[in-house]
Length: 302
Image (cartoon, rainbow, N blue to C red; front, side, top):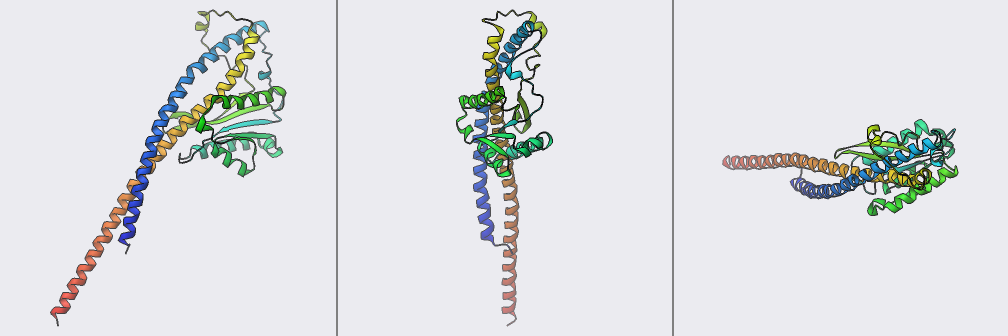
């Protein structure tokens, strides 16, 4: 028969855990609202920057006969060295947020970069403590670790990371740079994405509505080439920053969902234990009554 005291202790312990998970869910919900606001505030700037670059790229194509001779557009004959920027999280308790992304990254490496990985020419830059803990233990060539990034969430640090990789690409040290992150879809779901940020594809700035282009007139000074050189680094910085903001919002949504599930599981476990407790208590009472009746019957036969 189960010990009643042990069952009561477990019920009390689960109740305390339930209070913690409820509090963590509320904290994650508050952080999610803030993260969503930052993500949404970044979108208009990113969209307008892309539209301006599209117009400048069009002017450059007219000037250079449809060819953009820009170092960041360099299309290598073959990828001899590549870099993947993996955006994880600093904290756990967010379900499969990190695990699912890391599996996608490993699958992508096996399918597309297995030769580079075997030769040591695939480099990883890990952003977030969980990514920094995961990949070095599994033999990946991690060249830079940025733990605790989401505690400060600094755009300047993000821009510095991308600036270093852009400089390496321009010098020819690396041939491709990719960013792996969780794209925010909804509070309870995320898309695992591995985007190519370098080289920039020639059609990256196409897509602005032709009618809208026709109704606008731009005066480009001092020249399209100078503006393009100034704006492209900003565009790259925004690409990584957008991935970080998307990942931050996805993390808080995943943690909120995980804590909600944990709270519901605690309630279900409490109900099960209370049922066991009542059954054990009733069994004990029945046993005691049987003993009393047996004792009374024995005394009556004396």
